Image 1 (cartoon, rainbow, N blue to C red):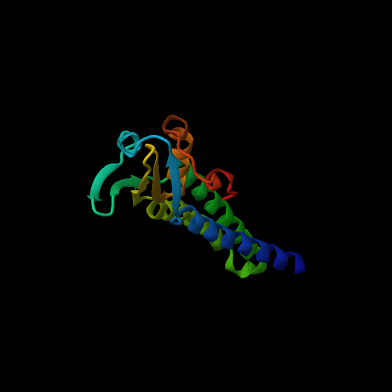
Image 2: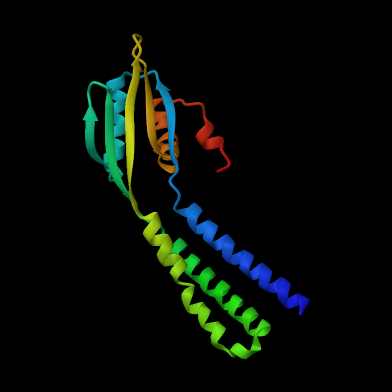
Length: 183
């Protein structure tokens, strides 16, 4: 019986881990980063705007007084991740059902029906991960020598994509914390 108790505990911990993974997979990771480029502000803003438009972002609004551009986009959930979470949820729920069956034999085979709840993990992930996102570009300063400094506020993954794909072409330089962070 002590083996069944520890197995039940480990199975419940696995379920808790799945819940926390679902929360982390759909968590808002909006980040602010300052970038500098030796190129003129107009050229940098046009390059960023064209790249964002090509990726499906729409220009939402701008504030000329604050030198701010806003873009809107829709983040989609990952179908392979949703399927994986559904599979893991089903297997985990089936394991919990087996353990409950062993701990409480009077329940019969009914606890195995918990496996039908497993796909709910994929559904929850798909609903929470698909959401509208915004990206803000703000010109902090346009240097007299033609350079520019921008403050970008967006989802962390989008900022990493900007740094990797546009960094060399537009000569964007930041503190590099996005690419070195373990998250």
